[in-house]
Length: 176
Image (cartoon, rainbow, N blue to C red; front, side, top):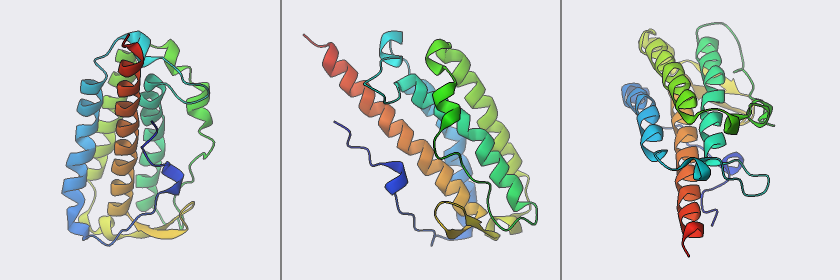
């Protein structure tokens, strides 16, 4: 099926007002609950792989894996760096993590803790920082802190959509 767009091909428009940062914090805060809700499925479906593509559980683990990057980038805005911390575009951390060998409850709990830490940190920042601009290393365009929050929320939604797609494919494949 693969109707979810390829993440690295996405284009972003960061022309919305900086005052949307509370909305984005609310959206980011809600991702753990959304993930927990859609992953109420049998373990065999969670860890099912299609070739070299990530399983549903690996998709969830990837969201956890990126929390340290999102936090590092929030910290970048608080310092005098000129460019945001670069992501590992090979996603080595996710490929090597062995997420399918872990209990999904553990991944979800760790993600919830990390995400709430991120949102709590962002909510304590001076509001002037949300307009601060830094260069995004892959996109090669300026990104405000509020844009970074949008980018992280869009990344969440990308993987939630992919998980939903994999669930639908798995349920269809399970039918006689």
